[in-house]
Length: 307
DNA sequence: AAGGGCCTCAACCGCTATAGA
DNA sequence: CTCTATAGCGGTTGAGGCCCT
Image (cartoon, rainbow, N blue to C red):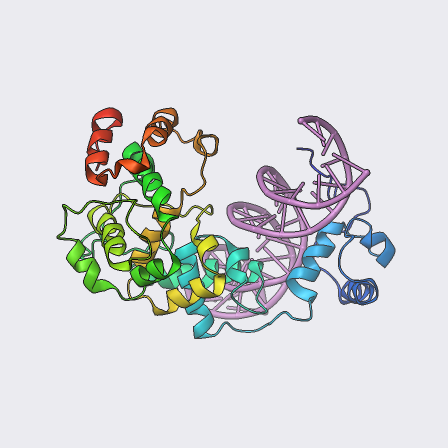
């Protein structure tokens, strides 16, 4: 990939923008519209590189930018979306009208991060820092990289998760705690990919069984999440607003995080024998109606201990 | 008053993704 | 398919303001 030289030329100004420069940029964009950033500086009479102009416009001069203090509602939205998306500032910004990714990133680093720490929450994982936490989600999770089986289980789950319909997933996420509680004791249930996905109860029991029984093994904040393909941004945001257990939603997202992943995508992961995992996964016949737990046990004997 | 440390946030840097020739 | 230009993203930097001693 060839890097475009930027701001390397002689005579290119850097640093803070002056009001005069701002005016030139605004006037030019009002006349000609956005785009063509490479040639814009010269045409607009600015001694700046195009990238600098684009950033100045996108982060500061755009007329739809909302300035001023973040509201408590915006704080809440950022925190919840960060739990779901991680440091995907641009993605988070799409949920906050008038706020830029840069502004949200700065606000997170200078305010919200500290606030979470003060509440005893890890700003990265959003889980309690205190290891005595009794929720189960706050307990230190084994690193994803520590378990090949966990990774594969994620992929197995995701392989079937795509068969689940939207209503089912919504049901699992929003307030279906009764079923989940029952499922935690239903260890013998067969996680069957052939169950009718429109039959909500059996499938939700299967999926949430996996969640509850293996909660410590699921992780991941991958942007390859198929979650976003199943739900619109607005719907995801609504779920976060309504869901009681944010941790559960994260777990579910983690389950889906390997959807569409290929061996090539994860071959750099240090402790994963990807070839083994993919071979096992590919050889697994969906029609076998295989019990997931038995399947995982069989994996343990082949590629490591399942935690 | 001074100056040192801390905080904030605009701007920059380095990189990837994508489109189009 | 390859190459190149451009757009976009996330991490980092540093100037300037604020606060404390």
